[in-house]
Length: 79
Image (cartoon, rainbow, N blue to C red; front, side, top):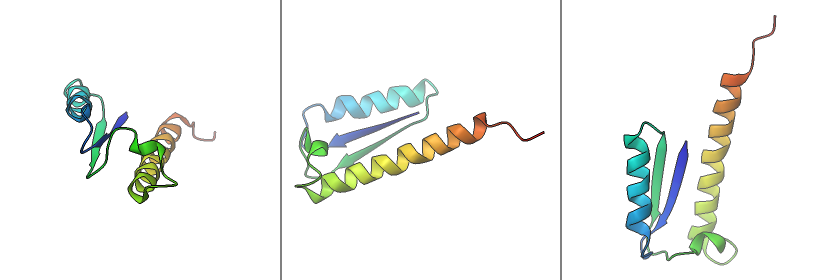
């Protein structure tokens, strides 16, 4: 699974969103979220930009859910 974070004012935004589309087309579970008004590298500034803090929180939630889902499918039932 993949989660792609893009920023509205990032010159690489379209490539990131296209990558998510290609992953989904190949059968890979992928999500993408564009953050309005943000610029390349905003994700690294959660202490200074509230939307960057939200982006980090969003990624943590998605990652935690993916890890929990992955772990639950790999656990064996007690005998």
